[in-house]
Length: 226
Image (cartoon, rainbow, N blue to C red):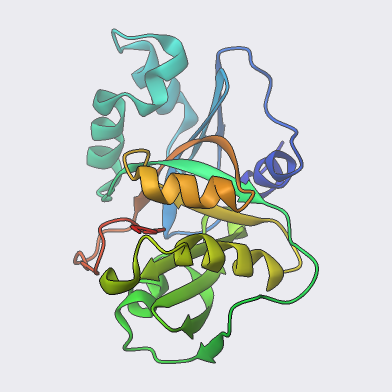
């Protein structure tokens, strides 16, 4: 049986589940994360709940089967059944590592009290963070053990290309595919990631274990709000 980790690894290489309108249910990789990954005409639900419940709930929806897993009614049932919380439906993007060193001057920090780092620790493991004048870059292992990036740009230096420079630098700091989650409504962030070579591969809704909500700067995880 394919695992969540295997599905994500294949997607990073451009190999996706069959576009057959189906839904694959796989176990969670860890307690923290459950949720939905939606690829072209195929969805993956990762949960420790009974797969029969997932399929029965989807069949009971009055909606297009191709979009059923991200339908608000299914997500509401999923949240109610698991007692989890969710923030938004994000676009999934991925990029390969780049050779060479970052053009930005970056300083690695370990300030656990920094708001961006504190937020990332709630969603990822193995956090590393760097600062540059006007911005912060954070990487860590999130859904399915994949390596994820988020950045934050200070208000007074936006519209100068720093967001794009940061997410480009992130590709030069890693040796494996790098993932980003971007709210589709955050058009500036989406443009910055795409300009830096990140490829949209699908959409996702991550259900996190219930915990007090933490608000940081931008409401976007990968908030390149330049």
